[in-house]
Structure formats: C-alpha cells, structure tokens
Image 1 (cartoon, helix red, strand yellow):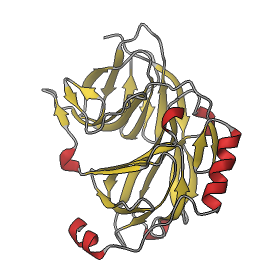
Image 2 (image 1 turned 120 degrees about the horizontal axis):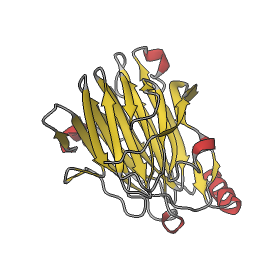
Image 3 (image 1 turned 90 degrees about the horizontal axis):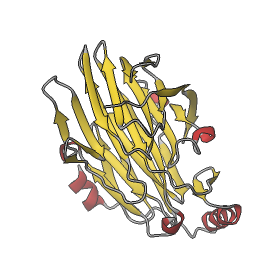
Length: 295
C-alpha cells in the first residue's frame, strides 16, 4: 500500500460551548474547505462535573449532521421532532438536523468521567431541507474488526476488511474508525482517492506513512490527497488510539452562522428567522414511558 502522509499538524483550541461545557475544538472554521465535508470536531474529557454538568440545553441546528461518539459517560438527547435517547460509553448518536431541529444534550451523570467527540458532517444542498432524523447506535451494534496483531478497529462508518460499519451515508460516504493499536504495531486500510481525511490521536503517539513527524495525543493530522496513495498506514511504538475520519467532498459553498450551515446568506437569514419565530419547533414534555424503556 502507498500511504497518504501528514500534510499539516493541528493543535486544538480550548474553549467552552453549550452552558459552559469545557472542550477542545480541533476542526475549526478555517479548515472546513480543506476537510470538506467535515465542519467541526470537538473533543471533550473531564472527570470534574463542574466542567460538563450544565450540558447543552435546547438549541437549534439546520443544514448538517451531528455525530456524537462517547468513550465514557452518558448523555441524553431530546429534540423537537420527538426523538429521545441516551448515548452511553462506546455508543454513537447520529442526528441529521436537515431542515431544522431544536435539541438538547444533557449529562445523565452527576460525577465521574465524561469523554467523547462530536463531529459535524455537512449535507448536500439537495438534502439540507429534508426531514430531520435521529438514531442511537449502542456499542454492541458497532462492528469491531481485530487482526492477528491485536489491532482493534471500531467501524462506525465506512468499511474495513469487508466489514461494513454501523452507518452508511450516500454522497459524503463517510469513513469513521476508532483504531486501537498495541505497542509496536502497524496497521493499514484503503481509502477512496477522492476523500479528504484526517487522524485525531487521543492516546499515545501515532506515525502516519513514512515521512511525517509522529502525531501526538491531542493533535490532529491532516492527510495529503495524493492520488497515487491508495490508503493510509499507521504505526505505534506504544499503545495508542486514534480516530481516522474521511469523506467525499461536496464542492459546494459553505456558509455558517453558529448552529446553521447552508449554501448562501439568504438561506442563513431564513434559518435565523425560522428559529426566532419558533418554526423549528420545541422539545416536547418528557415521555416517562419512553424514559423507563430507555433506561
């Protein structure tokens, strides 16, 4: 395999969002065009309840998808389309905001470790005003591929060694893999030549390809788009974990205003008007029967 290499190292920016949740913003606005169709990547990890307990109260979205992957802790999702669910350690929450939804993401714990990621995935113009959808994917439903060298890969989206991931999306064709490498291991996977791709190392140190400086924990490495490369090779001297993310670019205008991502200013103004006027709906009262079933 001819591996992609590291084009650029990125250090995340410490910030807060929601009602003061501490997080690290890794994929920022200035990288949206380079990493099209991905719009944002937030990483969060804290065992201090003061840094996450206030959560993300009701707020709107339009024009894209949110993918929340939990490593530790529990978050409850509720939205104006009537969806409700809990994403727990090892699970994924995939919400397609599309034409608009108001949702909340609130911790289901008062103490302990809260760790995970949220990735924003753009929608093509033709789908931005489609109906919103929501899916909870528990850890047990996410395929895991383990090779003879002990490398373990959770296939959230995409395909590894003929094993299809838990999620498949047309147009953007996302690949989202959580790769766990034991010490002194090498692992490779093919990637579509046209996909933009990056890695985010959250444990250990990972070398990509042959020439690059290793990517340390807490940093993102943007991968080259050399058409000669047919995949990516990862190597780890010590135990490491890394997210490998890739997707087909949309090549469409990206206009973002806070929680809205559309294709032009007029669409953004309409989104603001719709949200202000309450046309995105409101989160309904809690359904106690549904809550009991979820828990």
